[in-house]
Each structure stands twice: as C-alpha cells, then as structure tokens.
Image 1 (cartoon, rainbow, N blue to C red):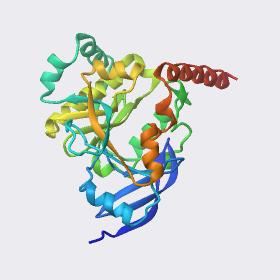
Image 2: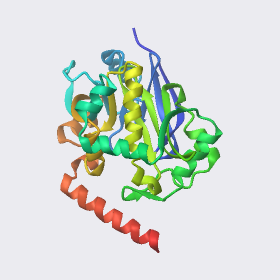
Image 3: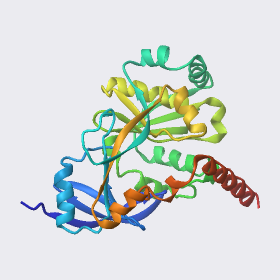
Image 4: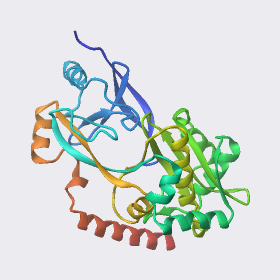
Length: 309
C-alpha cells in the first residue's frame, strides 16, 4: 500500500534569517529538503524525534518522486550501535551524562569549573527559570544587539528588533525551558534548554561580553544540569563536538564526545554517485581541518578590519 506524501512550504530560520523551505509530510512526520548540486532530505526536527519507519519513508519518497537525491537520518543519543545496513558515517556530538547535580559538581567537572560557577555567584549572578514575557524578550534583544560579531564571525541575531526577536524565538517554546542569568536585575545571559524526550538539548546559550568576567555561561550550564536531574533527563546534549574554544568550554563542563551513526540512502543515480565520490556532505566536509582553521582566522581578521573602518 502506497503512503500518501503531502508537500508544502514553511518559514524557518537558517543562519538567523527567515527562509522558506520545501517540506513533505509522510505519516505525520515533516521532512525538509536542502537543495544544491545534491538535494538531501531529512527529518525537519531530527534532534527532537526519530524517523518512525525508515523503510516506509524511503519507499514513500521513491513512489512520490520527491525531488531529492539522498535521504539522510540518524540515531539520536544515546543509541550508538547501528541498527540499519544503509551507508553509515559518524556524527560527533557533545554529550553530558546526567545522574545528579551532586555527581556533576563533585566528579564530572574540574576545580577550575567549580571556581567559575562560584565566582558567578560571588559577583551577584543569579540563574533562574524564566518566563517568555516582554521583559525577558527585551533582555534577549539587548544581549543580541550588544555586538555585531561573535566568535570571529558576523552574529546572526545582531540588529534584530524587539518584535522580530519575540516572534522568531516563540515558535518552539512548547518544548523549551528558559534559563536566565541576572545581575542587579539585568538579564546578562540566557539559555533555551530543549526537551527532546530522552535528553535535554542546549539550544541557545549566550551572554553579554561586558559581563564575561562573571562567568554567566558556566552558571547557566550548572542550572541546566540541575533542571535535567529534576526532570529525569539522563543526558544533556550540546550539539556537535566541533573544535576551537567552544570545545574547551564543553569539555570543562563535563561533556565528552559521543559518536552516533548517520545513514545516507541514495534515491537517485546522482545520489549514488555523490555517496561513492564522497560529495554527499557538501563542500565544507571536503576541506581539511587545518585549512578550515586558517580560513576562519582570515575571516575573523577581515571582519575586525571592516568593523573598525
């Protein structure tokens, strides 16, 4: 029996900008297409749900002639052992096992990190669960508009108005907890902690550079561990493992690298050739790590020069 495939478009944020994307609906699950030389389709909310039936999905995509070359899906944390025989590669995630806050505090982090959390408290930083009201959104907007550059690149959300921030960040509140870091009544940092059924997910974590000396991000992470314990979430995931200074922050806060299987299923001859030639992950995956680091450094220097001019 063929499975009906519904097609539609919707607006989402890509690199901080509203963008309309093509989607299909298969058995109540939404999949989005990423077009390019190779068009890939994957579950739109793959951090928050699993593909219910990969074989059924593949058959539906082929029968409906969905214009995609490759179907990609993965096993979410903590399922590390491959369950399917499709072409498999590995995703490196930053994952923190959560038992109790006490264990995290005494066994999973080093004294330097504990000192940073204590420093935040001594400097008057209070982290609490927040409500998405106008006061909180105004604080978010102020954090976003502090500087046009972060981590050596243009900051996606710089220059956005109160109304834009309120609209764009309200869409997933049904599955997020808001954590705010306050100092003297001012919101100096916040985290959007996603609830992905079997783990917590660090969505947005950001603080004002002017208050960097108060270590608000470390205080926010400590609160996130506390919330995960209370809600019975045995893992806290901080996106991909990555590289650079952010990896050090993850490591210092008890995260470790976990590799999980990602599957690539060709739907067309172009898809078969792309996987065989290693082109299915896009051009960025082909650039050597040392070259990436040099390019990022050049970009950072260029943007600094432009911003000063």
